[in-house]
Amino acid sequence: IALEKLGVPHQVFRHVNPVHSLEQAASDRGQRESQVVRSILFRISEDEFIMALVAGPAQISWKTLRKHLGRSRVSMATEDEVLTVTGYRIGTVGPFGLPNPLKVLIDASVMREEEVSIGSGMRNTAVILKSADLHRALPDAEVVKLIEED
Image (cartoon, rainbow, N blue to C red; front, side):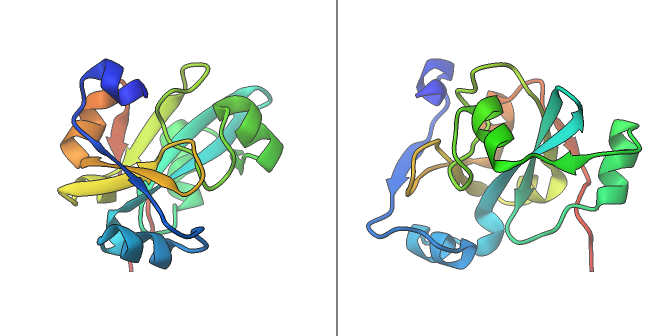
């Protein structure tokens, strides 16, 4: 696993039953929904993608994302694009072990939690680690405010 090569403390969590929701993932892992980090891939040009990490059910503000990237058009990657770019299927995506380097944005909501869990690249398997270690493992990632606040 990529985190072992980086020397980042973590634990691998395997779900006993298939995971069908964010709520279930959090409950199985003994976490709050806000501790489950979603890795979302966006296409920002014909062949350029970025990954945004966001905590729990929070929604990314398209306006804020476009403004931050300096782009007038941004779209969510298709299922095929996610598999091609990350090597992972939707529902398993994480920012580690990618076939090619990818710009990663970490929403500030992720850093509010001391411990988080994130996709491992394998079905029904997550990686649990400290949010500070997540950031340390992604030294080029930028922490930004992307979510819509109530």
